[in-house]
Length: 464
Picture 1 (tube, helix red, strand yellow):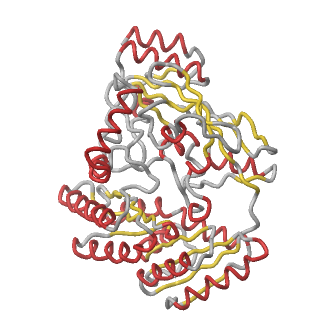
Picture 2: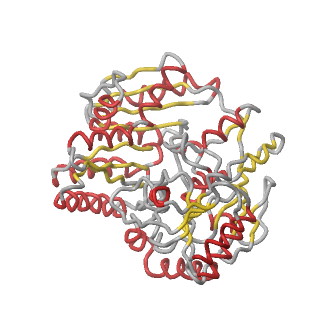
């Protein structure tokens, strides 16, 4: 270890480049996932250049020391969790927006750039970077790419992979790979860019990202519809999606989540309702008619009330309520179980036409196991986030929560869905990925990993 530390300090001589203080090391142990294992790294490195990342990986390879790439540690699947004795490679200091090319509608950024920072920077030149995970004020572009993060705009604009044109990646050998393009079109060779997007740091370390930008959309119009059953909200979603309309946001919040949000930050949410549907359209001159059509479909689905936001500030407040779901449910868990309240966050996606079946199934599972389960999610693309409230100090509560989690996962796959729509696999869903892709798919994954990381030093144990 002394030899490794000497090499790392020589490669990263700047202040804060190499951290070994035990208190600091503990702060890099894990991401936001609950109830998945983590360890204490031997050292944390914070490079500022691609060359420094390359030097770290070469040193790690010589010493056969695992490397755990990390961004803001806002992930929800344990993909950034450290293991004992590893090198944590934190990319937060690589936070430069290298280029915004307005004419070609692209931006080139380092991985430590925060999502919201990029959104605001490109907005200044009339452009738009759509992906907006709930943690957008914290999560980094590198982390978003590594997990192929989504967000509330996915129903219209897609997930991160739909906006990544090219990457600079440092391989386990320390070699630097450039893949992808800056052009509007390009099909030369294998699509290596797509291979690294969503690979969760297991195949290489992303040090530069070229993203596609869009013209800034028209200001959005927003409504909320209140339903007395969660299934009725799901029926409204199915009608809206099936109509051919293209909302820019279509989110759902159930009663448990609304109550938690209201308790955490009061904003007059209808907490006695079963579900709240938030819909936005940014279709310019057509927007009023589109919003009116969505409102009519909500009423046909038996919405109790439909409210149209009076202005952008009111619409932003509704969006803020949705973004508060995660922290509000953590607060609820702490109130219910003062000794050890926690949450297990699921991330299951099904075909849009099976959304109502998923919603009804989640309600049945929660009732059968007598557990508190809140459900929020991106209803417009069939991606829900059931949140299971548990008492971490009680093994029986943890076991029961795991049963609920597994039952929801099994339900999602049985409906033709996937084990993760946007959070990634990490440690949380390794077994479920194996079930989803089958033995041949798992063999292919292992073969790709072995080809690019033969010594298994990059984020070992994650995904599979």
